[in-house]
Image 1 (cartoon, rainbow, N blue to C red):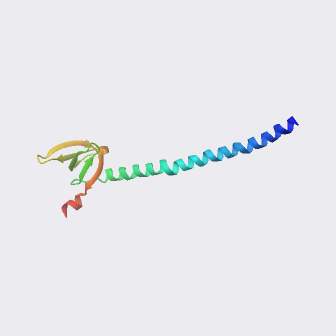
Image 2 (cartoon, rainbow, N blue to C red):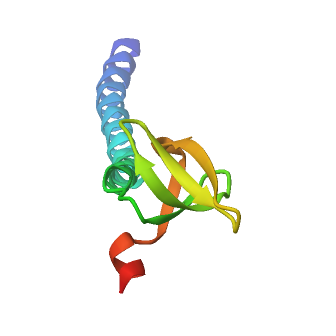
Image 3 (tube, rainbow, N blue to C red):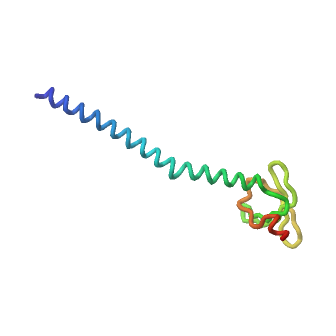
Length: 107
């Protein structure tokens, strides 16, 4: 009788472990589609925006500085801010968004 209980426990325990594994895999898939994938997509969009910077674009930095791009180098760009045309060199990675594109400002 004790042997039958052990056999019954093993069969339900075995199928229970498969259910647990399937649930863990399902949670990982859900985590990927709702958290990791959208974050990677957003990172690609931000990198594309930073690579498309042009002289004349009006930008806002992560620190809240608003200025117009005067020159662009490999990893940095020079922006002009304020009425007195103060120039600041910043990293491209510090650009949060482009407020006005150079083409839009000319029209």
